[in-house]
Structure formats: C-alpha cells, structure tokens
Image (cartoon, rainbow, N blue to C red; front, side, top):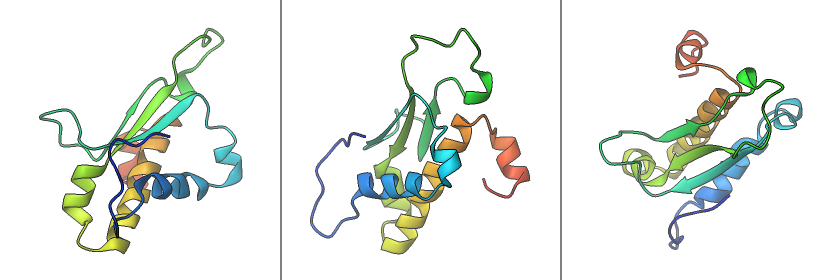
Length: 121
C-alpha cells in the first residue's frame, strides 16, 4: 500500500486502518484476493463525491484470458472520510473499515445493488 501525505501527530494512521480492515476478513476470503493494489489518497477526482473507489476486473469476470493485466486498484480517500467522520476517532475507524470492505466486495464481483440487498451498503 502507499499513502499520499504525511501522518500528523494524534491522527489515525490510515494505512494501518486499511490494512487492519483487510486483515479482518476471514482467511479464506483474504487468500483469494488477487492482483489488487490498495492505496490511500488525499482526495477523489474533482467533482466525484467518493469515499473509496474500485477500478479493475472483478474476480467473477476473470477468465482464462486474464493474464498480463495490471493490478486492480482500490483507492480509499482520506480527505472526505476525515471531514465526515474525523470528529470521532472510533467513528472514523469504523467508516474506514466499512469503505475498505465495500470496495473489496466489488473486487469479489458484488454490485452496489447486491450490497444494498444485503444491508451492507
């Protein structure tokens, strides 16, 4: 993982929180996460109100021709998360975890609609 920006004193270590969120997945799920980079960036692209973003080919759509492909990318946007939830460290930690798991779900081929059905959106 890589982080854009320095960690100030007393702030949550975003990279560590993201790693902890991935580590909280059951081992059988962690073991099948494949060819994906997870990064923390300061802000989403202009005009896009995002907390996180998955870009890539979900595991459910990868076939025998899936070779020599650049890694998928999960981006967690620190700025909006801090603005929305930064007043409460525990709330911020929970939301980082929620966003990471949401984007990992997309890596597994689970759509926003299905996440809503499951009560996980």
